[in-house]
Image (cartoon, rainbow, N blue to C red; front, top):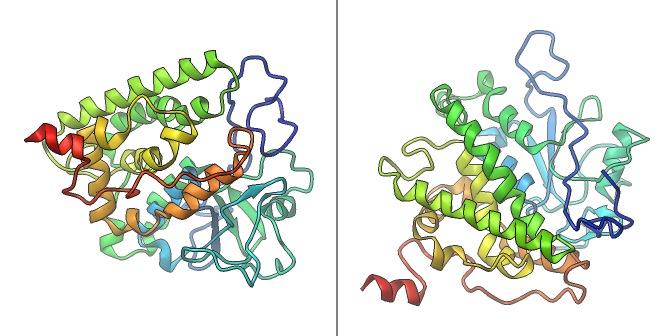
Length: 339
């Protein structure tokens, strides 16, 4: 992968393809219940560095709360703005919205101002992007993992022996659905989760049009699936899985940010995809793990004021209002069509 000249350039300006190419995560160790594991599950040993703005980090916050890991794994949130130094920690005198938006809380990190310092502590020669989420071991002062899909899987099972019966039973990757889950991940990641970025960060019209068309074809596929889902409110009916989490974090950002900022404007969710809109709102309004971890101010400010390559004036649009509609309310056009 070629490296952009600036952290805030998401596509190398010399890359004539105009395509956004996502970096592969570098830290891939695992917390494991297996005997002799390098990183065993322990209470209060691990810390999660996240951004409320980032959908990849958002996945892990939802799973942490669904699994009752708030009693076992601490977390802190970086400032919403991503500048030339990468993600930074707030200072003691800054008051940003949201829970746990605090300076780096790790003992020995009192002088740390940026997340990059956590990366260099683990690997002094690290040369990639300084991404969130970061699952950190307070005992060895090392990053365990910075790949959100793997952290999601770790949270889903590896602490189960320490959990109460209710949270142990929250199986986000049930055996009977694993084949269906993996199939959904494969196309939803490429075409939707990453598709919004491939559309929004494209630097040529060809790259943009190709990716945004594929994105909306995939959204149509989601809508058709959910229209046919009669057994329950989740993607696979009665069972809440990783698919709900991974799809939600992209779609909850779609109308407030991706429609205008990433030019993903063939349709919006609230007026163009009724079954998807109902599914998303059900998660937000009925499951606290989704609503509690969705921080719209960080989301809107981060994208519109950090991505200067595509929004150089850093003006944040006021709408859409509200950020998410109440469960039983529709936009006027949809309400009129249903009469």
